[in-house]
Image 1 (tube, helix red, strand yellow):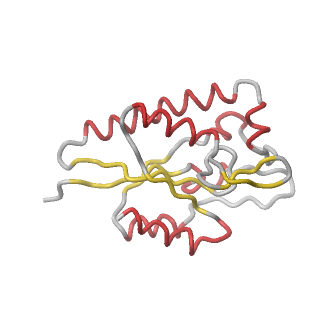
Image 2 (tube, one colour):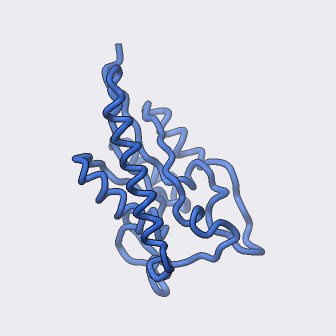
Length: 171
């Protein structure tokens, strides 16, 4: 009998690419990032889909923005905190209510260059720098307050091979 099942919380756009930013003239891609889903299935890791704070705040179409631009939007940080608090409560509930088998969160999977859901590389000004997105910062803060610590991973759509290989660390 299985005693424990692992799961990860995944940036919304990995499972629903239709929520990513787009503007008129930009090619829109829908569906899932199949290589990520396939890798998680291969290593027997469940998936919890995080909400997309950018989409739920601005919808689409919306322009590509940097972390500092999102931080300057009136009420965006409040929106992100509300989502992070709700998600942390849901994750805590999954852990507490999963008794047989136990459910264990083993990671957060973000998206490279996202102002909200990056874990390593964020857009700022006219370029990028090392850092974490606004939503992931808040989510980790809320999870830590509940005594929940997780590894973070970043999926780079431009380098899926390397990104998905890193997921083996979840084992």
